[in-house]
Image (cartoon, rainbow, N blue to C red; front, side, top):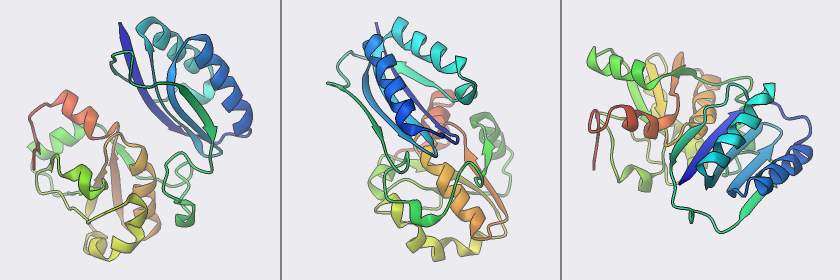
Length: 220
């Protein structure tokens, strides 16, 4: 039986190259395949392997104090999700040349809102706005009801559509994306541009849909 593991962690990495080699050795020892990106700002990975080996990987990661609070997300695998292992050092763990945003999630990011909390907010009809930070093509599969869709053809274009969100500066805003990693920077970007009350959905839309299938999130 195979499992797919998705995770990310924004945390200061002093020696990305050393972590890259350690991750490569660990994954090869456990016969895991997939993609892992390491940067000074953190780590972002998606790997597949036998369930028992994925569990060993998580156990090893949690032994490192740096990664103890990492959100590890598991799903059933097929054994063929990836053809090889790729572990690389990059400038950032989210692709898109976002360094120009001058946003460090280790210093500035939105407040975490769990799927359970968001569900409660929606049920209670709390006054807030969900801002969908996914690309246009990703939103075609569906979105939260009454979401604000900025019109992102690419995530790196968020600064260009910022004027469309200016009217929400004094409102409670919840940013959402697929798995959560992009919202770390997106929410931080809004905070740095004067938005007063910014949250991000912890674990992303996929976590919400797992906990509350066929609720609040509808197909387009």
